[in-house]
Length: 238
Image (cartoon, rainbow, N blue to C red; front, side):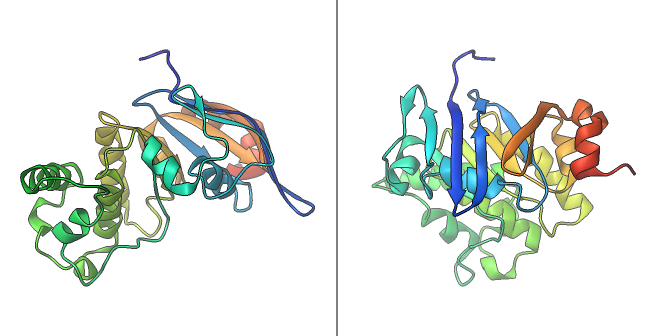
């Protein structure tokens, strides 16, 4: 694995009035690496993601991507730098086909042959080859999630941020999504916020635990599950 960092944050802080949403957070991710961020509702995970994708500016601290600071950049400039985000609730164009949804996700000019090739490759990546001509509104919930992941990947980002990608999924869909993420990591780094511990366990990756805005523990998930502090503040003793 490359020793070069793709993303690095140092001592990020964000307040909303008297509420500390992100408290001195430092994380790092290398190219093609998979990591998870877990924690209770209100722990600061989504605020951290909002900073990482450019939707919010931190009050202090730094975000570096491929060795350069992203300070002062606008939302679309984060995207152009190579950071894509998939939100928790699918926002596909339900009246368009799966193929059309993917085609509309390309930013910038591209030739028809290149677009067709990219769509074909993405349908394979997200396991929707047989659904190419289906209206997105007719897809099952899990398939809509996979389609939106594919849409986020159409511009070939270097980092994909996934916000609760298995929310509302069946156990089978959750496992298939974990397999999908492992496959995606051949092409981009992936950071996922997740509450479903079966999904995090299936990923088996380095995991950050957030509590009251701060990273309280990090490490392999197998160790996180056994950590007394994490069990007390989040996972429970069961």
